[in-house]
Image (cartoon, rainbow, N blue to C red; front, side, top):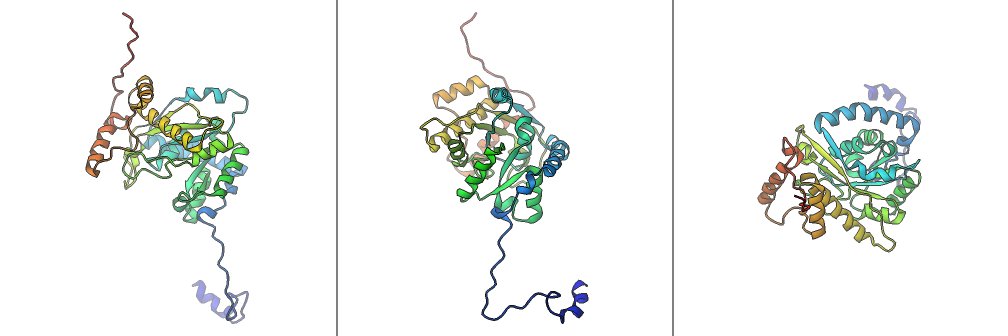
Length: 316
């Protein structure tokens, strides 16, 4: 209808119709405004911050509780960072099994960091369409990153955000687990923490993969758990690779702590016998079978807390 109504005006030329292009002239393509090039500055303006706070306190909170019922442990390990009048920005680095992880983390992170929290999100998934990009930026304060080739541009953006007082939520695995087991950590979060001196907080998220893991068409409501670890700081001469290894080991320790207890997990870590996060190097059906066995010990697969073993201190 609109096209038919515009036909009488077309004979008048520009601006009633698109200008013609002379032969031999190549019109440059319009620069992309989606994916890694999507501008999220508007999402950190005061009006957007107020709208996001309302979304987090209302719909996001209700949806998270209805689907995940998260239990939060380890907040006492962050007490020292919160004691100062203005706590410094931090980098939260959890493992990643579900799209629910971000909503669960936003609810679990203490309020002193939640208001200025920025989420690193995959540009090829959350910012491939305009409506999806706008929602991700507004509701989650997400910024697009190219998970295949994180370059200087992303590193400088993260550094600027930290200097402005924003904390970051970065998934070191780079994406959701494809089969329920963990993936090796990439070095982006460790590199940023090492270069800026920002403390990095290891986090284990348990149960979200069973509730709404990759490949599931619809969520299955259940229980989840978030376990915060002690903040890590890069040593004076510590390499990014070594810090990243420490981070991954600590997340593995938190995963073991969640299904047993802190003493058993610390003892296993000291002995170098922590269960592997990435699963056994066996055939696919056996990996699935062992994953089901492990999930029965996790909070999403049991109805009560397991029996915990405590150290024998020699007292009678």
